[in-house]
Amino acid sequence: MELIEEGLDVDLSPFGGTIKLTGAEENVALAYQVLSELTGLLRKKITISSADVVSAMKMAQRGTLEYFKDLYTEELIKDRRGRSIRVKNYGQRQYVQEIKRKDLVFGIGPAGTGKTYLAVVMAVAALKRHEVERLILTRPAVEAGESLGFLPGDLKEKVDPYLRPIYDALNSILGAEHTERLIERGVIEVAPLAYMRGRTLDNAFVILDEAQNTTRAQMKMFLTRLGFGSKMIINGDKSQIDLPKGHSQSGLVDAERILKGLPHIGFVKFDSADVVRHPVVSEIIKAYDNYNSTENEE
Image 1 (cartoon, helix red, strand yellow):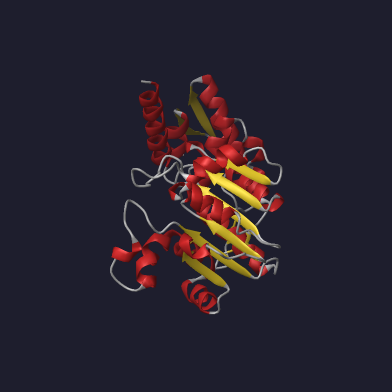
Image 2 (image 1 turned 90 degrees about the vertical axis):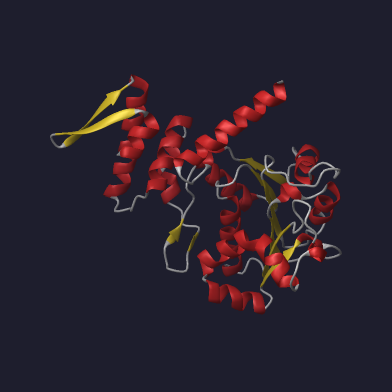
C-alpha cells in the first residue's frame, strides 16, 4: 500500500471491508485500476512482489495496464529453484517478442531494465529447447582506458570482472555448478569481444552486452559473425559510453543510425519507466536524462 501511496500520490485507508482512496481524481483512478489488477492476480493465487506493484503503477501511468495480466500468462523458463521467470513490464514484453520474431535484435536503454538478464533467459530457453547448440556471451573487455595487456593475472582473471553481470545472470538461472559444467564442455562460452574476430557463429545464441563501448569497427566485425541457425542480441546504454577520448563514435550509436528500419533487424528502446529496480532508481535516471537534455540544448 505504501508503494502505491508514494508512487501515485494517493492515500489508502481501510474502510470497513474495502479500501478508501483519496487524492487527485486522476491519481485515484489510476490507483483503483492498479488495485483491481493486483487483486485479480491474488485471486488466481499468484504471489505479488514489490516489483510487480511498481510495474503495475508504471504501466497504468503509460496507459498499458491492459497488458499487465499477460505478463503472468507466459512463463519464459524456470530458474534453478524451479520458480517461474516472466517478463516484468510492457517494455520487457516487447523485447522478448522481438527476440522471438527476429534473429538480430538491439536492446537499448538504461541499466536496471533487465536487458542482460532477459537476453540470457531467452538464450538458456533456446538451448534447452535444442534450438541452438551453444551460447556465446561477450562484451568489450577494454573500458575506461584499461588494456588487458596491462592488467595482472591470467586471461580468465583479467576478463572475468568485465563479464560478471553475465555470470550473475547465468548463475541465477542455472546455478553456479551447472553453469561451470556447461562452460567446461564448451556449451557456454563467455569471452571478451576481441575473441569473436575471424569466426562464423553458427547454431548459436550470441549476446553482446555493454555494446555502447564498442568502436564502429568492432560493432561491424561482431554483426558480420552471425551464422546460419543463430540468433544475436546486442544490448547497450547510450548514456554510459566509456570509450577513451579520441576513439571513433560508439559502435552502438553508429549501428542504430545505419541499420534502423531494416526488416530483419529489431530495435527495442527502454526508458526509465522500464527500470525494475527500486522506484527511486527510475527517478534518478529520469533526472539525469532531463539534466543532460537541458545541457545539450545550452
